Length: 178
Image (tube, rainbow, N blue to C red):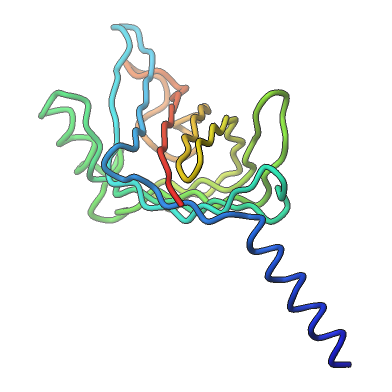
């Protein structure tokens, strides 16, 4: 019995070592978005990423991502638009819905990169998403780069149609270190 417990503990420790913990460089992390509309493309970003990342190319089943950003950090470079996005119920209503979150369910190999399959929650609505990403490591540092699209109406952001496009493209650059 004791041999079994020792073996199980060794396997657990090995598994935890394989799926490395990465600490996000929050200051340099970039969460950008763009949405096309009839009057051009609107670009913006969010800041203050908080994330728990366990990732190892050699242990994808043991890898996971849990991340959040404060919705009130949305910035498009135009003060009036930012205020509307933050305050109006039809947009992000950040007083009522302060966080945007993502929790992976599975990470798997995809071509020359990876994909994180998980749940994205915006304005209290959770939908499955697939985030394609790459990871480049250099010693104890690394960079995750990813991109995915969401249909804003799926999260009750804005009205259907109108002067804002339906598809929001989100681009991520997340520097990390051990």
